[in-house]
Length: 95
Image 1 (cartoon, rainbow, N blue to C red):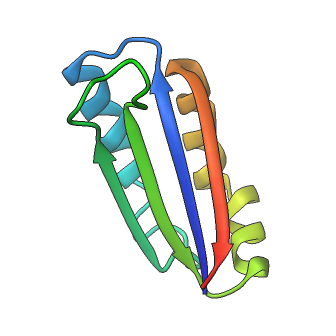
Image 2 (image 1 turned 90 degrees about the vertical axis):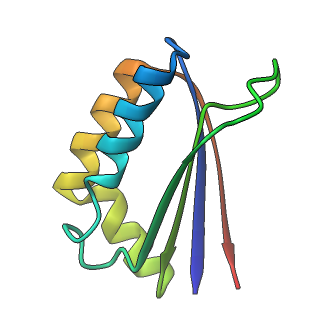
């Protein structure tokens, strides 16, 4: 099982913008067969070191994660997140 975690810092850190970005990310649910599990959370601390959103997802294999990365639905989301995002960090690990 592969876990894929991405944290996003948004240009506009307002609650409304964070909720819209969360909705966009959640729109992948059920549209990419390799995506087994998807959660998106909005930061509640709002500290200087906080990121605004986290995406937590699971895949059966690295091959499935690779297929997800190039999937057209995911590519639409990447384009949107790049337009509203300021910084992104990611961690992928095998459990």
